[in-house]
Image: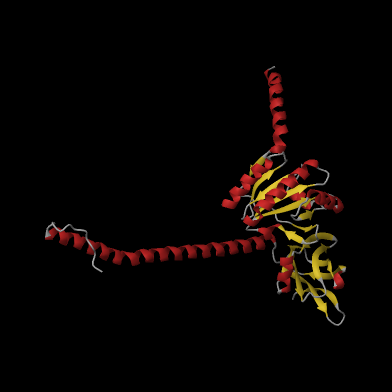
Length: 168
Length: 188
């Protein structure tokens, strides 16, 4: 009987925890970010490890995600503000058709490199299960922060984390 | 320079003497100790440098040990990419198939191409193969003369013996044909 009675509250707690999962951001200070190379929309190949020495933001998105546009605009503003201080941004698109990414970019006024992950190898490497995802990598190439969703105002948190990594 | 001692004129001569003597003593001590302190710092710096060297050597030994364990010489196969000149071909990627299975697909960045053109050699694949006949197919993609998209394959059948096997994929220019050439060859 006791067990049955406790199942109710336990399931509520479990559901609440599951509902919170997408918004979890964590610090993984010792994990080296997996290296990758992808072709950009302009046709250049870019490799993450070549940006060592900079604080790097990598965001994963598709053109079908509405909130990705809001995040892209927020990231564009952050990138413009911190680029001179040594912040780089790689935007990984995993649409199967690169034309969609092009249209998306044209509408959002973005000037950071957009990389095409048509085979979804990098998205799998970074275990992207929801979109958008943003990871922030420090100057030594360690994966320090990860955000598995975006809500308006989140950029303040991104900014604080960038500031922290820039000051190290 | 004599050590100055702010002694009021109404003080005794003994007081003045003591004050000056302590000044001389302090200056003497400083003169003796300063080189010793500087020596200590130099010695610490030397120790730190020696420690760094030891860590680097240890790291190298560990790396070599790991390679030997993961890829023993009797099964080891390594494939390298090199470039010569590169006027007629700008490399974009190399895809490698070994016995029909894709084992590497590598995109080259501008910096890596620059390193290749300066004589660098890139190890694109390292793995294990048992002794016997094997087939290697390399597909090069990039831009050829007049910025045309270029895709070319090259293959090699080789016999793997009991020693390590090294294969080179060499991209070079053929001036008389104004075309790139892709050669797959075994290292002796």
